[in-house]
Image (cartoon, rainbow, N blue to C red; front, side):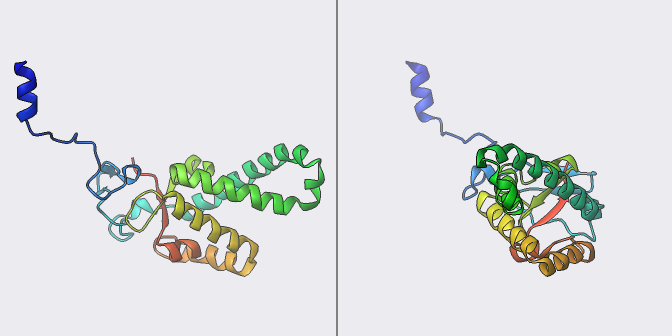
Length: 185
């Protein structure tokens, strides 16, 4: 009986692992240190490429290699889907690749802020606040990527921007404020 009275008078304090008020739980990220130089938390923005270049070191080539891995995986997924189209998918295979690739990219980026190829290369996408992408942002990023793939000049401009901009951002990244960084430790 005494324990119940004590519990009623003791103010409830929330556990320390809850996100700050107003921050969705899946977006809250504990602080993490990268190379001991800079700390990223859910309250910060993207790391500055001049003061924390380790976040961006080698990212453009890693994005290219990740893209190759992803295209191979998408092609394999399409080959698995092909029998379910009564093999008529052979006649529209590039469109099947776009369709399957869209959902592959959207779902993998929405769940881990990286495709399987990006995870293999130890890079991930972050939003303007330095947080992992939400499902909505992942959808918009994938839609922008798909439009770029369909329109070759946009894809070439996007690839050039990834090589020439300080954060290695493509066109979709620039529009959404996202960027790919080396995965924090």
